[in-house]
Image (tube, rainbow, N blue to C red):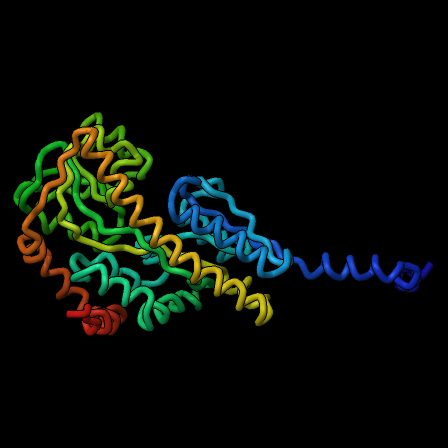
Length: 330
């Protein structure tokens, strides 16, 4: 029997309603998104809110299936899965995107931003939106940028000046910029997985680490490193990434729905972030942590050589110039 004719006969025999349902089912899209954050993290909450908006605005034709908590690996693994077409979306910090798109190293440059306002103008403005398209030739682009606060050092002893970091083994994200930053401050950079920091501090494998207030408190690092020096050396945003292969399959209406929901998730995440920073700081202080005000100029001066390196890099220098041209309101 001719299978083509049989299939045509079955289709003709189907009621109109059944054929309509079959067409609707074919039009439905499920986007798989994996990240390494706990469900309680504000970025994870923002992504859940985005998924609900996308489903509602698309009338259920677009759904986001989210796999949190590192179920598909860390950011490096999920970005590579996305590049290979096995995953549609993921979350990655600027530091984690850096190996795939060098200009994102800019966010690891200490004291690049003079204020939160300047940071916001960059990541949510024309410069930030342009940067989000840079990894296009690597198989993905960013749909949204999220707050991740400023990163500061915390240790088992008070830190007031760069001299207090001399000889300390300090856990860092392993990028060329952060490694050199620690060396310039006199410390010993020690790249270890984030999940091992608590035990490493507790057992003396490392003496200090660096991160934002929520990460400091929520991971219980505050229990084993009571001194948080508010040097605020870097402000590294998180990004929602989507495979260009997936993006190119969407029609204009679908792209519009996804883009709008992503931008709404930015606003929602920023609100949640401010709340969780204040709450984390309050709880850490109640548990005995000391937050130390430092002279940032001393740290900034010690790290000046990094700027010389960046200005010599043809891939990064133009972006540095653009960012430095953005001024906060006076």
